[in-house]
Each structure stands twice: as C-alpha cells, then as structure tokens.
Amino acid sequence: MSILKLTDVRKDFSKLIVLRGIEMSVEEGARHAIIGPNGAGKTTLFNVITGKHQASSGTIIFKGLNIAGYSAHVRNRLGLARSFQINNAFFGLDVFENVRSGVRSRFGLRYSFISGPGALPEIDETTWQILKQVGLAEFAGVPARELSYGRQRGLEIAMALSTDPELILLDEPTAGMTREETLEAVEIIERVTVGRTLIIIEHDMEVVFSLADTVTVLHNGIVLVSGPPEVVRQDQRVKDAYLGSD
Image (cartoon, rainbow, N blue to C red; front, top):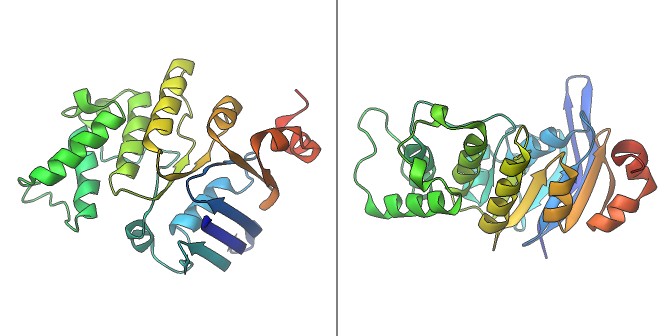
C-alpha cells in the first residue's frame, strides 16, 4: 500500500524547469532512496513533497489526501517530516531544547523565547527518549553550535523525529561525515525508522545499497528508473547517467 504517490509533479522557477513530470510511489514502511547527479532535482523534489515549495502542477497523495497546495506545517501535522542538507538546528539553544521544541509542537504547544519552556514532564520524557534513540542524551545540555559536525547531523534526525512522523525524509544525512561517523549514522537511521517510512537522498552508494529496499534515480528532472537496488545497480541507463561502469 502506498503512503505517498506523486503523479505528473512539475516544478519550475520562472523559466528554469527543475521537475518535469515526476511519477513516484512510496510503499508504507519502505526505505526508499533517491539518487542522481547534482542538478537532477532531488532536493527540489523533497521541497515540493514537504511544502517548502509548492508544485507548479501535479498531485501529491499522502495517506489518501492530495496535499499539493498544503503548507509545510500542515503537511508536518499530517505526519511528514524532513531533515535538510544544511544543518537547520537552533544554534543558540542546547540539544535538549532543540528537540523539545519539536515535541512541544506535537502536543500543540509553541516554544516561547520570553517565558521559557516551562515544566511539562510528558514532553520532557518524550524528548529524552528521542535523544537516547539517536545517541545524544549525554549531550543534552550542550549548545547545538558546539556539537561536532556528525552530531549536528544526528540532531537534525532527532528534530525530524520530534513530531513523531509516519514518513521521514532525510536529505544527505551522511554528507561530510567520516567513514566511522557514516556507519554510526546508518545504524541510527535503521533504528529510528523502524515502523516508519523513510525517503533518503544520498550520494554514498554504500549507504544507499545498505539501507534502501527501493531506489529511484532522477536525471534532468525526470525519473530515469525505480526499483529494487540490485535491479537499479545493473540498469545501463543508470550506469551511463550516474553510477559509471564499476
């Protein structure tokens, strides 16, 4: 059963056409990777799915609803969350408060920089659970700006989890990481996406082929091919456009 289905989704910025009629289906509970060369339209596709940008045309069906035209915060409340290529944390807040701000929104509360967070035991407990999941509990009181790069990326994942999404989109979560940090990140992603649907943009093919059960290849704003990792890996069009012959 599809949790997300895109039909003829197009996006242009004035005269620049980025998405040229995307057709894509994501099964509930799947780990779905999106790959492709730089400029293929991957991050724009994420932006259109999550509502950061509105599609120029086409339908985006999420849990049976056409969410094309919905704002980003409405899509989030429906159960869709994402991380970004560039760290999007509140660097003036500590790790705990970064995650807690998202948990508060799950409970319909807003963060106040004037009155402070207040005492909310249920929200605090949920925040601690998320931090433990991503291995950041011991850094709860550390300002986000003081975290190592790898842990900042982990904080991005924790913030995406804070609203308890059914569908989580991760945009290059291992970009810039060392091999050791990458392996740790893959373990975290595997752990936190149990019972959820994952869409991941990733350039590290080891990560893609270890995590994903479905791979969609974008090229020049269209879906070149989509299917199981081994089928995609052997597709000559993919080799020519992206993977190479090795």
